[in-house]
Length: 199
Image 1 (cartoon, helix red, strand yellow):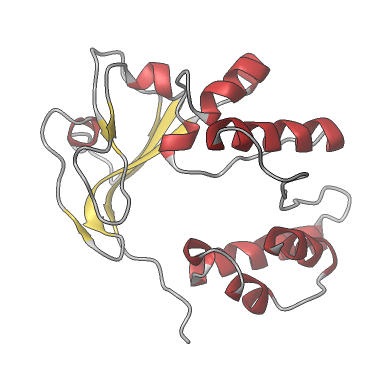
Image 2 (cartoon, rainbow, N blue to C red):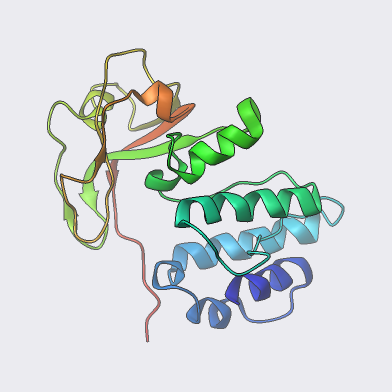
């Protein structure tokens, strides 16, 4: 399992992180993920008494994907006592009744904070146009800064996009509010593609 070997690398320095990531899922095989793994290793060398680890599932999956994602986080936290950053798409981390984020909020209450990541337009290996005006990303883009971390605004229901290959305007959160789904939102005006590993 790639995450097990990556955890070994960031703790001990054993292994080649590029080779380890080459065997990972496609969306991990990027220069940006490699930079992140190397940054974690450098942090651990400087702070050996306070290391950052890469969590890995403790057991085979069972049940729904969202429940399993949450159960994996809970099991790791209960076994290690670690603070955890669960890094996943907004379709998973938003707090609703049927997402991993919702199950984690149910388990941890206010100790679980969900942070949404949005952008207005750009390219993520395929072009993504500006959102329709009734989407939250359009409202955030009216603010003066290029990027910011802000509490979601008090407002009526908003939509916010899920971006996947290919972009589909039907894939979005709706029938709720940003403040229900997220504790904060980090918004970037324009995004650029990741750099895939060259063969």
